[in-house]
Amino acid sequence: MDKYPLPRLDKDEFLRNMLSRYCRLKPGEIWVDAEGGHKVGCLDVASEDKLIEFVGDEKPTLAIQDPPYNLIAFSLLSPEEFVKWSSGWVKSTRKILGQDSALYIWLGADQNNNFEPFARFILMMENSGFVSKSFITMRNQRGYGTQKNWMAIRQELLYYIKGDPVFNIEHVYTEIPKILRGYYKEVAGKKTENLERSKSESIRAGNVWVDIQQVFFLMEENVNGCFAQKPLKSIERIINVSSRPGDLVIDFFAHAGTTLLAAEKNARNCFTIDIDPVYCEISIRRLENYRKKGKTGWQNSNPFVQEILADKEILSYLSDKHEINYK
Image 1 (cartoon, rainbow, N blue to C red):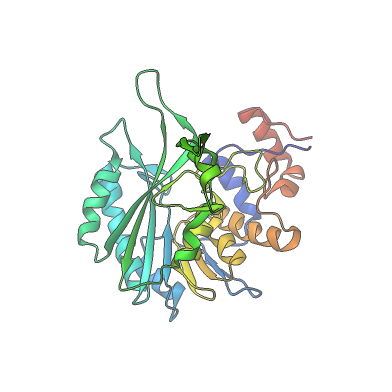
Image 2: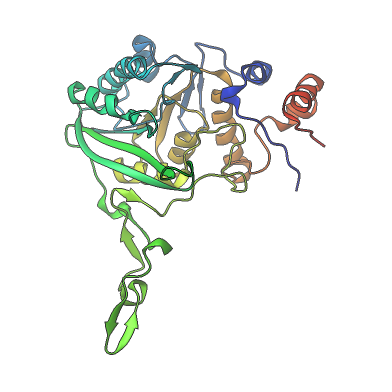
């Protein structure tokens, strides 16, 4: 199997600039999908007027936001600055969403820094005009930690509503994950486990998700270079539960294009933006690749492999800077 990895693009501005020559969007430009009705904009989330113009007269019923934790356009900010910036796009989100709509926000909680920015963020949301509904935790299979602390293996997801949005209860059910085996009980003299006694092959996911595989390089949906990629299954669950077929979903932090792809797979429209042309291009190419090949990502390859193989400057940079050699 050929391996064409990319390093973390969020940490390599020079590589992003070189890849931008192969991007169809420049800052301020918008790609309109003639086939499916989606849109991708290379826009700044801080510009409310541009966001409103981008969405137009459409009334989204769902927003899925995955902001870079304590980062704005790749610049590290204090928790106070991050939350102040976030209050702006939260306000824009509420203004753009329809009367009865849902908002999901992925957010980090640094256990070594007073659980920031989560702590300040949820306090800010008290005055956002949204109503809190659930605090969801998605369990990672891998984590980080030290020998003197509990390993961090969780991702936080906040669920808010505006008005009275749809909640399709039938889509909260999932296969029974292995982690829920156990709960042994003696029945008719025989010791049985949970799965043996179950009368169903599914279980309600609840607000602790333990059944979703964290994205890693061997998975088909992997997009090399996109460090903060969310599992496709998690976004599909949100879309299926909190919207109807034909609804419009918005996402102001496109990154790997997961919301765009999930909307395509589940008969929704998606309007998504990113401030960086490279992530906009990745999102568009991921959609196009899915339509052409039925693939949800690139596994060991990447969206720019053909251009990189023909670009001596990028090949040399990857080799010298990152010790990555394409064959």
